[in-house]
Image (tube, rainbow, N blue to C red; front, side, top):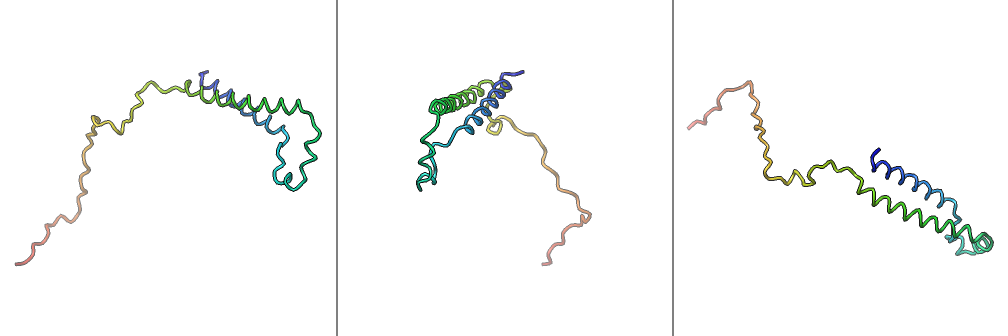
Length: 115
């Protein structure tokens, strides 16, 4: 199992956990409903500690996901070849012959114009 595969598995697990934590949270801003007076009473009651834990875990998982993505770049197998472009290589010449025109069945010479 390569290190990139391990990073990929960790990235998928952290992303899934981040989705779950975000979906569990209650929306903090009411959106349009709070501006019309409907969302003021929703945030009066509730548990403060749970909200703090979910908020901190969201930031922690997001930071961990970003770090794993950046560190996975180190684990990518580059193949050991040169990273220069072959399109810009002026020394590489192709020695393919030019295609010959197809023979036609009418090989008669062209008529010469009259003087």
